[in-house]
Image 1: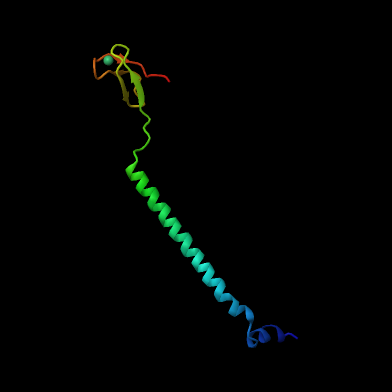
Image 2 (image 1 turned 120 degrees about the vertical axis):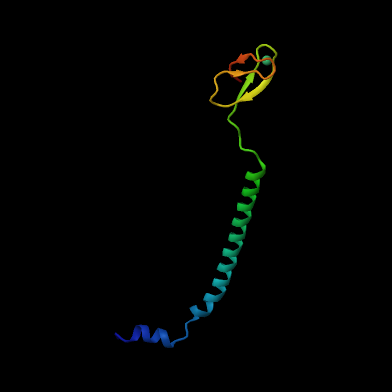
Length: 93
Ligand SMILES: [Zn+2]
């Protein structure tokens, strides 16, 4: 009784061994397809990040004197108009 478990399993050809190969093939195909999709997504994101500019946090200024619209750095409170030189406050939408 104590010797019957593993010894019988080793001598008997198990149907699970033959069924394992299609499962492995399907799993390998699944892994390959998922890996290719992942590579394509990474390449697309890499190309998109390289070609599209980063969204800027610049402030928009509108000159009170000449109505010229321009942008400057985010941490600038008052920016000089490049057209007439007047200092302007950030434009609030
Ligand atoms: Zn101006």
